[in-house]
Image 1 (cartoon, rainbow, N blue to C red):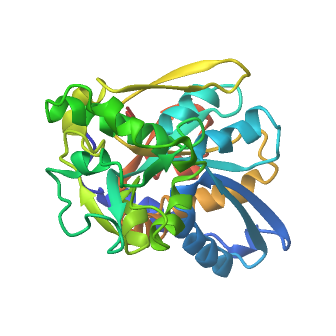
Image 2: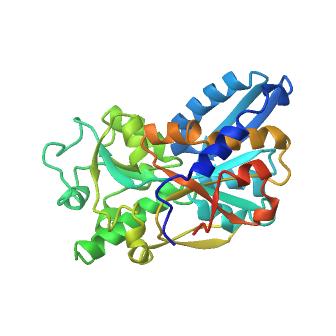
Length: 325
């Protein structure tokens, strides 16, 4: 199903209405716990700053990590949490709904790019046509996030699988991985940034938003392989990566699909009222969605909801569309 291209007048009116509520709704000293994808760190930091100005009685406690690790904190470690924001909405559907959450709101998009700096080997010659050849050179150091923890990790592998098909280079996927030692895999994709900036790594797969936020050089891949275009959703399905499940010994196969972020409020959220307020802030085109857009993370307009819509708070229901993929 295609995504709506513009906001309706009624949607804007609804958003204005929900933000006319008094800040007195929050008690002083309220703590809101958010587990979120590492790629949301900078935009969520800005949102935290703005939200706490609007609601000075609230203290937001954020824990950025790979999205799978965020989910495991809830499903395995039973850590208290109000909101989970995942870099892959499908992880919420797969591991949180319906036991830990009732619904899932799709709110932003992204794409995978290959980041580098002026210090990187072959920085002066790499381009969109030869990047995969450079990754196979023995003197090149490159890495990606851990696919068992961070969606950017398994998406990086998917890009390589799709590149093998797109460029008609049989064996390319294996050749690239042979030139990437295990120590070049990091728990979160954002941890690779310091390695790039210090010259200890030449290239790293990242989200476009992360590259923009950290002023990194990057190669944009063709839409056929960057996981950022709904037009090629069927082609993306050709890529598949196996990752650890949420239970010991469990293996889950992830199929390639366009990158869409998801967010939910957990059923047993300790601060559900405050969580509702933050989610309304996040989904506002003049507030949270504006921040995402400015930081290279195009928002869905309007955001889309999946799951048991009956359990969605009335104020939030006015801010979303239905028919999430």
